[in-house]
Image (cartoon, rainbow, N blue to C red):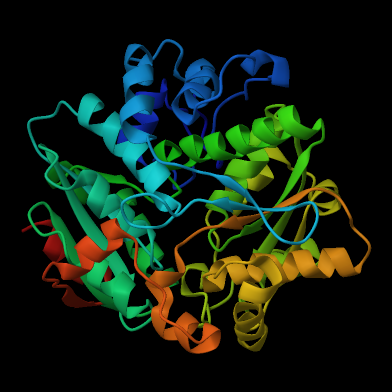
Length: 429
């Protein structure tokens, strides 16, 4: 299996090469040359998340140095519950992806990537993982790579544009994990990370890689919880399960799309964004036009230039067909507040602001007459956004134990300008 770049440059010869590079030399994103194809019967007798992941990804690891380690990688990285919980409305489920160590869905991909990287990095110099975050990615990567020998993490996050608990998590690791609060937006953070990864002179001094969803090592394992939940639903009901996915950088949604393209029993995939309308406008027929991001209550989706659009259009190059296959809808802050306040009575549970976007989009589908089986993808625990959620639901939201433990640690983040030179100075220390 080779891994081409979305921009047509040289392909990575194997998955390990793509993982180590993070970003392709031409600035594009690596993609599998072909996707494996499955039927639900191919997973008969396989029902745990690690085992499903192994079966799903084995064709992509074939011939790679990591192929023999894929089973242990899945076992150590994906021992995280991802329950599909029935909600009060008929034919509606919640896919809970917040049971990992940092209470967000990013834990699945970050832990998988860390397990791969500690096996594949054999250089004498430490490998620095540069990660831009709009809230949850950085903490998941920090937790996954904390104290892993030979690997260093530098987290870039937009100062003042993540929740206080998210900011605390980002700076609470220390050791080989450094947090930088950037005077700018997430798009600035993402631009800095991509510039550093594309800087050949810098790479000669400081070997770099990525842990954003531009990395295949983050993206591919996220297919697994869509595979597992759709298979579970198929076995129980004999029907395909649709997903409403909260998305900003399009990584989580791309994982759902790749899982469906691989033959898993997944129905419609609908994208939910906040007031950043680049994706909804594109899917409604406008040219794809990145824009400056705006700050919202669902801050992890405050993205104006979603990186994974390149991958989506590589797999689905006909924009008209792409628009016919997928829908994206935007949700403003007032609607997020209304949805959060109503969620305990409507759904029997408390939601985070990002999950509330998906819930509202599903309510719109239901109002239009869609009575199919749907899962709302719950991307983070509401306790990470207590200042937003608690006043609306009228009571405290208890932090899960792993999150509470992180919040007890001291936290520090270094301020830097949204400037490539400032980041380079930090990386070269």
